[in-house]
Image (cartoon, rainbow, N blue to C red; front, side, top):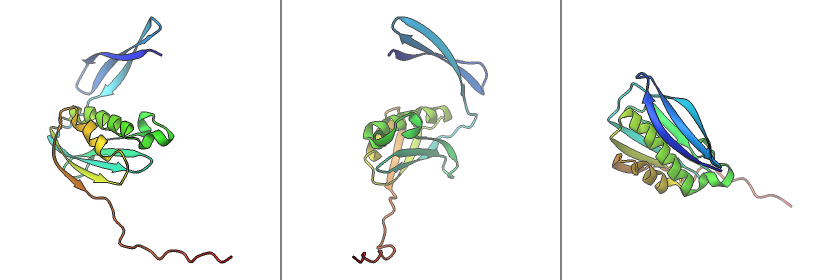
Length: 156
């Protein structure tokens, strides 16, 4: 299996861009072009919502008012089954969403974390690895205060 290389990004106009991907497989090369949308909205700061469960990691980038700008998850990147809940998959989700955030012009984010999965910290590390500043991290994991009454034990 060959490697993927991103060679150039040409902007034809402000709304679309063409990205050429060069695939090398056993000496043969093929070039595929895929349209990439460039949003017109510019946002300086936003909120990164990290939802990390045992089975998946989801990241949502919103503006200050709460309107969703971009999102990504482990499953949408192609990870399947138990691999979706790993820290490696969460780091890849963070890096993917950070590249999307850079198209909006995001410079700093406030992070809100929900859940107890293993991808909490690595998703944030993957996001800030692209050069976006972090202002605050707050943990909003829902904690039950006893909840509903448990079912009665089975009679045998």
